[in-house]
Length: 120
Image 1: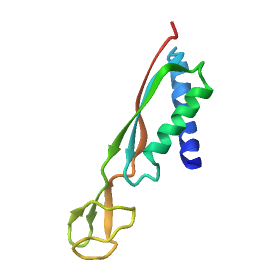
Image 2: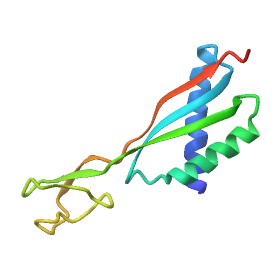
Image 3: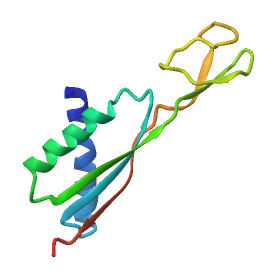
């Protein structure tokens, strides 16, 4: 949970900085893309978001929401070409049974978008 608190703090700092440049005073919605193996737990991120919102009511609307889009993990074996769904960053190819997979997706952790208003 501490990891997610730190990640969410960094994300919200970036969103807040961009929002202030664009004249947005109240954040209403933040959308993230989180990969299955990005080392960030969606439930913990949502909890961290709620904590930050409650501690910063001047920055967030009453109904501010966090939307997380999960990115499925995919890897391709560099030996046999098999595409598979790894459950961690280094996973065994289901065909070759060696850790020769190149990750294609699943590690993303980024802000997709945010919405807000000028506070009126």
